[in-house]
Amino acid sequence: MTPLSRSLRALAIVAGALLVTAPVAAQAKPDILWQHLESTVKRAAAEFDGVLSVTIQDLTDGRTVSVRGDEVMPTASMIKIAVLVELYRQGRMGDLYTLDTTDLVPGSAIMSRYTHGVTRLTLRDVATAMIGESDNGATNILIDRLGMAKINATLTGLGYSRTRLERKMIDLAAAQAGRENVASSNETVALLAAAHHGKLFSPDLTADFFRVLATPKRSRLLSQLPSGARGATKTGSLDAVVTEGGVLYAPGRPFAITIMATYVNDAPAAERLLGELSLAAWNHFVRLGKGSAYGRGLPPR
Image 1 (cartoon, rainbow, N blue to C red):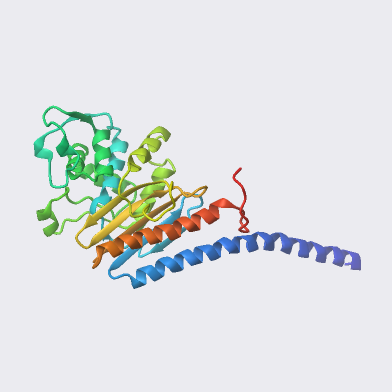
Image 2 (cartoon, one colour):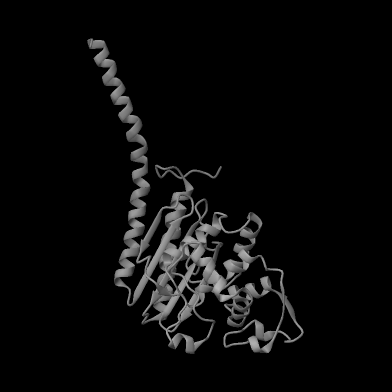
């Protein structure tokens, strides 16, 4: 090999190294942000007075932070996300239902306001009450019409073995017998991500599914976010249980998040923690969504 050939070969090696190094250096910066978010979540879980399960997924590239994400946890009313999924899978949103007093259970704030035996609602209307006010009567109406076995069969078919609807709402006898509605934060996020990416329904149904899930409600995940922040979530509360899962629409970088707390000693503190972790995730995704891989903020295209 001539001296000139050796020089050209050396230059080619250097140029190739630069081409490889530049993207890696750019990528290292988001990696550091992800490490910060993961450290925040791990620290919160370690210090929490109870058992905390958290999963956060970037809906742009699928990158995920998960702490105790496979732990089977009580869902409380967050299981209503699975009921809503089944309604849209069966496509029965337009089915009509005539209100009946026998469908009322404690926590039927919306259903109890209407004239029973007269008022007719679509199942989509019933679902809106289930999601917005967490109406338990509305939920049981949907469970009866959709079928508990079919809801669980859909979950199984989608590959979710840790998520199960085992009882209707306010069925204390079933709970005392050990039949509890459960899920993992990983599976709840996976279900939300599948819906977001159009893997469960047609585009029109996907948009409407999230419109219903975004029905205004008291949300812990949204409670500390900036004014105007948008999200589609479902909360859950029982004695010693605080949960919420949903999709939050950080500008340019939507993400799915589920936080589940059990053996809770201080429910207000747990609710505040959900808001704090949601804010930490929101700030993380806002920064990722606003600029280049090197961290420079850029105006929207």
